[in-house]
Image 1: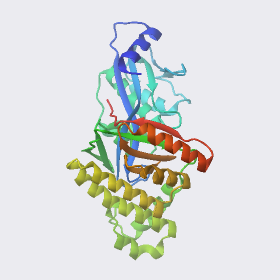
Image 2 (image 1 turned 60 degrees about the horizontal axis):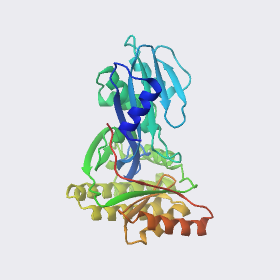
Image 3 (image 1 turned 180 degrees about the vertical axis):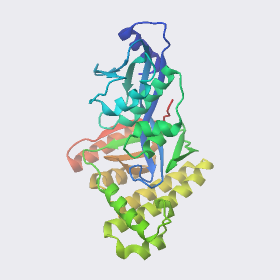
Image 4 (image 1 turned 135 degrees about the horizontal axis):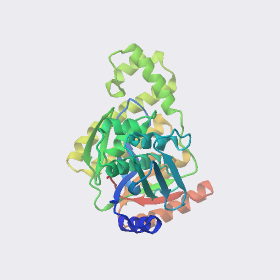
Length: 352
């Protein structure tokens, strides 16, 4: 649904009023290098054109009405009362409780498939819409804290700073954008039913704590070298050693990626992504189905690179080659695994 269609749908549901209608959007985060779920580590990402779009306007009440275009489900969140439901959205809405009266009606549409998460994009899009309705500004750090709540803030920083045609490098609370020249290419997403291992965050957090005990000056994984890891290896478990070694190699690739992207050398960047996938398979742990998808798609000459992402892979492929690649993958994956994976095609997106 584009902006004109969203506006038309909004007026059909709520009618026309003198209050101005504002729009926001936030895309789905796709991690290109590094791992956005690992705290104290750097990663590179972009947002996809699959996104959450919101349209909203002020309402003379003390409640925010939030409705989904596809399901018709409407949540009514009071700005003054503590609510137990929709806590992650209430934390955002209550920040506007000092404005009296302040209410809003917000309609949102998500083009993010149901097999991919939309919570980060929804929170950011709703917050940006409320800020526009209230005609107020909020420091970036406060916006991140409000949306992330008790979660890792890094993915929220990446989405908030995303721009169409660019990717972001996030390290701590710092975010730097680099060109991602994908003219003539598409991002192909393939997702299986098999989730990737979910113990990485806990294992790397344990390893980081032990390494900081040995090296008190360390503030992030960027400060750790292979020599430091080798010296401390007797204090670490084998999975901790493997995971940290992979992160160290990812940091090296990210440094190189920044340099090649500044020169818009997308094929050199793609090689780094493929090298990252090899490291994931060797050190990080890659599900067999995901490995099969990455290996099979890279056999196609129209594919620049592929890397494990969420419950499958993302790949950068030549524009126009998607249908042929999908048909081959569907057939081969079904022959091996007994079911068809999910596919979607995207461009880079951005947050407004």
